[in-house]
Length: 207
Image 1 (cartoon, rainbow, N blue to C red):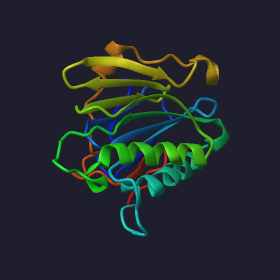
Image 2 (cartoon, rainbow, N blue to C red):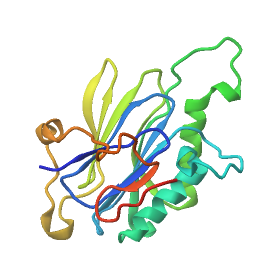
Image 3 (cartoon, rainbow, N blue to C red):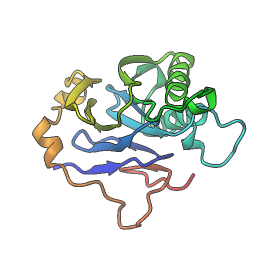
C-alpha cells in the first residue's frame, strides 16, 4: 500500500511511486497544481495561495509566479522533462461575497488566471481543470497520474488521469478504493511539513 503525503498551504511535493498519493485538503481560493510526466513517472503538486510574489523572496511555494517554476525544477531533479509535463488544476473558489469587492478580494479567480498563465508560459497543456465556484475542494493526486476532486456538497469524482497507465512497464492507477485505503497523510514525525519536499528519494526540505 502506498503512502499519502499532505501538501499544505504554500508547500510543494514531488513523488515517483505510482502507489503514493499527494493530498491538498480544503482548497478554497487556493489552487492545487498537479503536474505529471508520465514517461518519467514523476508527479508533483503545488498548493498555491496567492497569484503574485511581487518580488518577495520568502515562501516561494506560496505564489503562482514562483511556485510553478520551483515545482518544475524539483520534478526535473528526479527525472522529469518540462516538455513531457501535463497539468490538472483545481480550486480558485470565491468563498465570500463582498459588497463593492475589487481585484484585491478576488483571490480565487486571480489565482486561477495566474496559474493558467504559468502553464501557457511553459507550454504545458492543461488536460483538465475544476476552477472557480463558491465551495471548497479537496484534491488527491496519485503517482500514476490519477486526479480526484472532492467538492463540498457534490461528492467525489475523477477529474482526469494524466497518465495512460502504460508507461514504465504498465503502471496501474489506484482505484477509488485504493485512494480510500491509503495511509493517512503524515508529517514524517516532524509535526510541521516543509514548504518544499521530495516526498520520496531525496529528502529536500526547507523553503
